[in-house]
Length: 116
Length: 341
Image 1: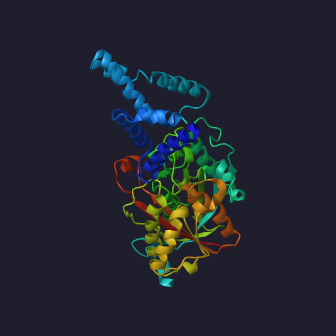
Image 2: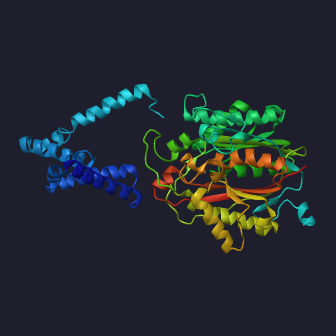
Image 3: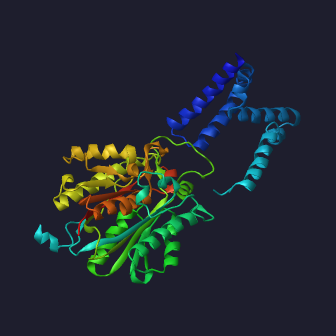
């Protein structure tokens, strides 16, 4: 059952993205930013953690969870170091993902033509 | 009509070529996807890979134009020295395909830009120069490349952004025609120069809708100025309206009293098979150029078509203009061909 819920919730988030693209006529970059910021806002409202409890990977895999992680990192550092923690903590939770993107991007560029 | 034949200027938009101006030879070079299409047997050179043996997409596009012109010279049994002027254009900033290729060819260049209408813009101007005696032999040529157009107009090629079904696939290819007086080849009889039309369409992934009114405007002017009707042609093609723009033109022409059914087609629908996953169909300068300079010239030369009107359509947007929210101005230029000796 938890697989079905993860599939349905993750799929619904993607449906929202597709609607923004097709009906909202947003560019792919705007769709991505909108979903990330939505994740931040939903986490601020306390909704996103509950969504993760309910849907598991259905909520952690889509790009909205990146916003959720940014918010979590910023808040937890802010609680320890005050306002400066917002700046130092924002990428704390997500730094592994960002580092991986840079490293794998570099490796791919060695094998393929990075400039198209 | 006889008194009209002496006159080069029929109207503000339409020229008549009173001399025996002909497309004496033509040639086409294309990429792999076009080589899998239904017109493959008419192409002079099909590159097996989209890089055409070059380092970059942009160099590949130059190679295509160079190939088209070289095949053309070969087919006409002449050298670069015999050609007075080349009129050419492409879709890239500052017409780089044209400028770099013309440097290699060492033929005097008139670079032109009309977006995807460049094929007929260059051919009409070449015919006018030859008819007036400013050039004995002129080449009209243009090119486009799917990956260079994607890079410039849409997203980086490695980004893989989604596209709606109304989007089109830019044709990878180049075409060239040799214009001269007399000899063999289809006659160029009329050209109608289009006016810029802007109906307020802003979606760069729906250029068929944006360009259709420009095609209708030029076709109407052509029929009014020449006294002809669509039925006087065996084939009327638009350049790259594809599956979205094609029915719009049919419908708009019908409301103006011009029935265009069995003789009307679109180069963007002719160049690929429907199962080739090209969204609504082909686009780009090479769409009309490749179809005109291969299939249409062949059919005219073999007498299978007697009278053809090619109306090349162009969307005159730039990446800056549509990012700043401007609508897409469009244009269309038409050239009439007559087959036979």
